Structures are given as C-alpha cells and as structure tokens.
Length: 71
Ligand code: 9UX
Image (cartoon, rainbow, N blue to C red):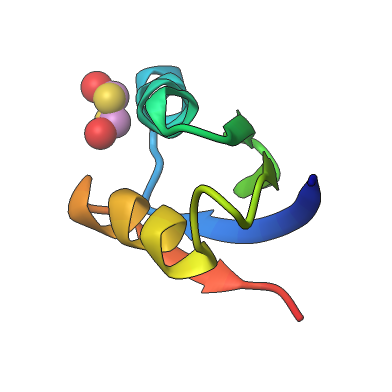
C-alpha cells in the first residue's frame, strides 16, 4: 500500500537541513521522502502497514524542525 502525505517543514535554513531530513526519513521502513528547502515542504510516500503519520512527523520534530501536516 502506498499513501501520500505532504507536510510543511519550518526551520530549514540550508540545503544540508533538507538532505538531513530526507536521509532520516528514507531510512524508515516503508517511507520514501523528498524534502524541498525552497517550498518548505516534504513530499512523502508511505506504507501505513509499516509506519504511521505520527511516527514520520515525530522524526522530523526530533531533528529540531517544525512540522505541519496538510489537510
Ligand atoms: Mo545548515 Mo540546517 O549549516 O540544521 S544543516 S542550517
């Protein structure tokens, strides 16, 4: 199963920020993520059998960034 999720990410100030988040997210089982520094958004494909939205957003927060799940 593949679900799509777009979240706003605040607090990224350089390209290393976005690639850092991307790397961490892509290490999660069932997650494929692309983080855009300019738009401050993360485009995420995830398998709800493996991972929850809360687990994904918690990872980003623990790295020190702000997250808003778009509805
Ligand atoms: Mo760039 Mo981001 O020096 O946490 S990596 S600001």
